[in-house]
Length: 130
Image (tube, rainbow, N blue to C red; front, side):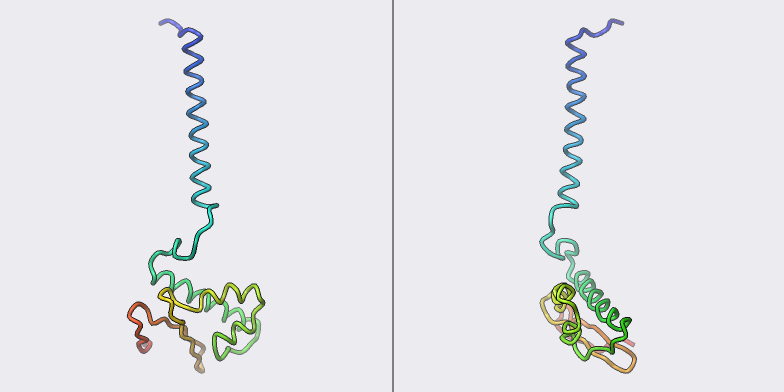
């Protein structure tokens, strides 16, 4: 068993370091693309319209419940919810008042609370299931 000459060891070591550096660069690029690059919209995260509408409904529900926890009465409309919010919260909330198909989310109150509904892809608001 003979030892490789100096030139061969140099190239082996060089190729090893080139491989390590390339692996680190590829990993860094993957992290940047996956986590740092800005997303165009919620549709990049939730491509299915039903999932995206569910997110809109959850955000609206949380905004209304935050006001309830703060001791405010139920608003009579989503516009009233917006009027009570800070400008920063209003900007976020306004983007979610339509479903993923571009139609307004329906808001209604009764003696038990409130209801948020989307007509969905059929554009037909059916009675709530009991």
